[in-house]
Image 1 (cartoon, rainbow, N blue to C red):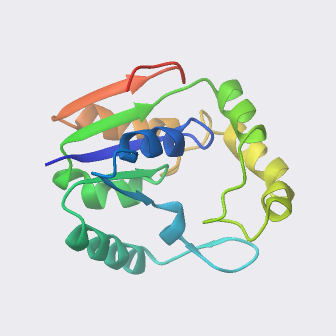
Image 2: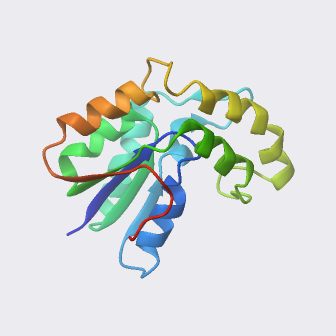
Amino acid sequence: MSNILIFGNSGSGKSTLAKELCSPGILAHLDLDTLAWKPVSPPERMPLEESAKKIDEFLSSNQDRVIEACYTDLLEIVVSKSTEMIFMNLPVETCKTNARNRPWEPHKYKSKEAQDANLEMLIDWIAQYTDRNDSFSLASHEELYTKYTGKKKTYVSNKRNT
Protein backbone atom coordinates (compact mmCIF):
# COMPACT_ATOMS: atom_id res chain seq x y z
CA MET A 1 0.00 0.00 0.00
CA SER A 2 1.28 3.48 -0.93
CA ASN A 3 0.03 6.58 0.85
CA ILE A 4 2.29 9.46 -0.06
CA LEU A 5 2.08 13.01 1.28
CA ILE A 6 3.71 15.79 -0.74
CA PHE A 7 3.95 19.27 0.73
CA GLY A 8 5.82 22.54 0.40
CA ASN A 9 5.41 26.13 -0.69
CA SER A 10 3.03 27.05 -3.47
CA GLY A 11 4.86 26.70 -6.78
CA SER A 12 7.31 24.12 -5.45
CA GLY A 13 6.18 21.38 -7.85
CA LYS A 14 3.84 19.40 -5.61
CA SER A 15 1.16 18.93 -8.27
CA THR A 16 3.67 18.06 -10.96
CA LEU A 17 5.31 15.40 -8.80
CA ALA A 18 1.93 14.03 -7.69
CA LYS A 19 0.84 13.67 -11.32
CA GLU A 20 4.11 11.90 -12.17
CA LEU A 21 3.65 9.44 -9.31
CA CYS A 22 0.01 8.84 -10.27
CA SER A 23 0.59 8.50 -14.02
CA PRO A 24 0.66 4.69 -14.00
CA GLY A 25 -2.96 4.87 -12.79
CA ILE A 26 -2.26 2.94 -9.61
CA LEU A 27 -2.41 5.82 -7.14
CA ALA A 28 -5.36 8.17 -6.63
CA HIS A 29 -4.49 11.87 -6.43
CA LEU A 30 -5.95 14.46 -4.06
CA ASP A 31 -4.94 18.12 -4.24
CA LEU A 32 -6.11 19.56 -0.93
CA ASP A 33 -6.59 22.96 -2.60
CA THR A 34 -9.81 21.50 -3.98
CA LEU A 35 -11.34 21.10 -0.50
CA ALA A 36 -9.56 23.67 1.63
CA TRP A 37 -11.40 26.72 0.32
CA LYS A 38 -14.99 27.89 0.04
CA PRO A 39 -16.00 28.85 -3.51
CA VAL A 40 -16.15 32.57 -2.67
CA SER A 41 -14.22 35.71 -3.51
CA PRO A 42 -12.15 36.84 -1.75
CA PRO A 43 -10.86 33.38 -0.80
CA GLU A 44 -12.00 32.00 2.54
CA ARG A 45 -10.93 28.75 4.18
CA MET A 46 -13.52 26.04 4.58
CA PRO A 47 -14.02 25.03 8.23
CA LEU A 48 -11.47 22.40 9.18
CA GLU A 49 -14.21 19.91 10.10
CA GLU A 50 -15.74 20.14 6.61
CA SER A 51 -12.37 19.64 4.92
CA ALA A 52 -11.65 16.71 7.25
CA LYS A 53 -14.93 15.05 6.29
CA LYS A 54 -14.07 15.33 2.59
CA ILE A 55 -10.59 13.96 3.25
CA ASP A 56 -12.12 10.97 5.08
CA GLU A 57 -14.40 10.32 2.10
CA PHE A 58 -11.38 10.30 -0.21
CA LEU A 59 -9.44 7.97 2.11
CA SER A 60 -12.38 5.56 2.30
CA SER A 61 -12.55 5.35 -1.50
CA ASN A 62 -8.82 5.12 -2.25
CA GLN A 63 -6.45 2.58 -0.72
CA ASP A 64 -3.36 3.78 -2.59
CA ARG A 65 -2.99 7.52 -2.92
CA VAL A 66 -0.97 10.70 -3.20
CA ILE A 67 -2.14 13.71 -1.26
CA GLU A 68 -0.52 17.06 -1.87
CA ALA A 69 -0.88 20.38 -0.12
CA CYS A 70 0.70 23.29 1.65
CA TYR A 71 -1.78 23.01 4.56
CA THR A 72 -0.11 21.45 7.58
CA ASP A 73 -3.41 21.54 9.49
CA LEU A 74 -5.02 19.31 6.82
CA LEU A 75 -1.96 17.10 6.37
CA GLU A 76 -1.98 16.34 10.09
CA ILE A 77 -5.35 14.63 9.54
CA VAL A 78 -3.75 12.05 7.23
CA VAL A 79 -0.14 11.87 8.40
CA SER A 80 -0.77 8.80 10.57
CA LYS A 81 -2.19 6.98 7.52
CA SER A 82 0.76 7.77 5.27
CA THR A 83 3.62 5.50 4.25
CA GLU A 84 5.89 8.19 2.81
CA MET A 85 6.40 11.93 3.02
CA ILE A 86 8.02 14.21 0.42
CA PHE A 87 8.94 17.76 1.40
CA MET A 88 9.31 20.05 -1.62
CA ASN A 89 11.70 22.51 0.03
CA LEU A 90 12.67 24.60 -2.98
CA PRO A 91 14.02 28.16 -2.89
CA VAL A 92 11.32 30.85 -2.84
CA GLU A 93 12.61 32.33 -6.12
CA THR A 94 12.21 28.95 -7.84
CA CYS A 95 8.65 28.68 -6.52
CA LYS A 96 7.84 32.16 -7.82
CA THR A 97 9.23 31.27 -11.26
CA ASN A 98 7.27 28.01 -11.29
CA ALA A 99 4.07 29.87 -10.38
CA ARG A 100 4.60 32.33 -13.23
CA ASN A 101 5.10 29.43 -15.67
CA ARG A 102 2.25 27.29 -14.32
CA PRO A 103 -0.22 25.98 -16.89
CA TRP A 104 -3.93 26.53 -16.36
CA GLU A 105 -5.31 24.47 -13.50
CA PRO A 106 -8.94 23.83 -14.49
CA HIS A 107 -9.71 22.05 -11.21
CA LYS A 108 -9.00 25.35 -9.40
CA TYR A 109 -9.93 28.10 -11.87
CA LYS A 110 -12.71 28.62 -14.40
CA SER A 111 -10.23 29.97 -16.97
CA LYS A 112 -6.55 30.73 -17.51
CA GLU A 113 -7.48 34.41 -17.25
CA ALA A 114 -9.04 33.85 -13.80
CA GLN A 115 -5.90 32.03 -12.70
CA ASP A 116 -3.66 34.81 -14.02
CA ALA A 117 -5.77 37.42 -12.22
CA ASN A 118 -4.59 35.86 -8.93
CA LEU A 119 -0.95 35.54 -9.96
CA GLU A 120 0.47 38.66 -8.29
CA MET A 121 -1.35 37.83 -5.05
CA LEU A 122 0.09 34.30 -5.25
CA ILE A 123 3.63 35.57 -5.93
CA ASP A 124 3.41 37.85 -2.88
CA TRP A 125 2.13 34.95 -0.79
CA ILE A 126 4.92 32.64 -1.99
CA ALA A 127 7.49 35.31 -1.09
CA GLN A 128 6.27 35.32 2.54
CA TYR A 129 6.86 31.55 3.00
CA THR A 130 9.96 31.85 5.19
CA ASP A 131 8.53 34.72 7.28
CA ARG A 132 5.01 33.44 7.97
CA ASN A 133 4.18 31.48 11.09
CA ASP A 134 1.00 29.70 9.99
CA SER A 135 0.07 26.23 8.71
CA PHE A 136 1.36 27.21 5.23
CA SER A 137 4.81 28.29 6.43
CA LEU A 138 8.29 26.86 6.12
CA ALA A 139 8.43 26.54 9.92
CA SER A 140 5.22 24.50 9.98
CA HIS A 141 6.42 22.27 7.13
CA GLU A 142 9.80 21.70 8.78
CA GLU A 143 8.08 20.73 12.04
CA LEU A 144 5.77 18.27 10.26
CA TYR A 145 8.75 16.73 8.45
CA THR A 146 10.92 16.53 11.56
CA LYS A 147 8.21 14.78 13.61
CA TYR A 148 7.46 12.21 10.91
CA THR A 149 9.06 8.84 11.68
CA GLY A 150 8.27 7.01 8.43
CA LYS A 151 10.00 7.01 5.06
CA LYS A 152 10.69 10.58 4.00
CA LYS A 153 12.72 12.67 1.61
CA THR A 154 13.27 16.30 0.77
CA TYR A 155 13.61 17.82 -2.70
CA VAL A 156 15.43 21.14 -3.00
CA SER A 157 15.14 21.23 -6.80
CA ASN A 158 12.62 20.21 -9.45
CA LYS A 159 15.37 18.10 -11.05
CA ARG A 160 14.94 14.66 -9.54
CA ASN A 161 14.38 11.00 -10.25
CA THR A 162 10.93 9.87 -9.12
